[in-house]
Length: 118
Image (cartoon, rainbow, N blue to C red; front, top):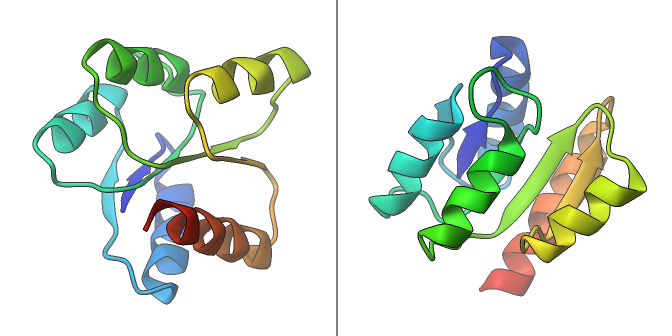
């Protein structure tokens, strides 16, 4: 599972949770690197931060759509407006978690998305 966040401490925390549900975490800090992994078939699910330097998480989602690349996605972000949530749903995002979050919320969301994508 791809963990995409520009903040190393957040990636480390999310990687631990990903491993806890039995998935192998792959971490990247830039949207362009995430797209490379997905296009090469190296990731089958993604935890994605929206606010990153360079290309944002929204830009990554739009790129994936243009390239017709799709994996289950959970967005993890500090603030998600109702308009952004609507946009994310239109771009195919399966889950949204607001920071700060409880560990149980992340694990539950991952399990839910894994269950619907298998």
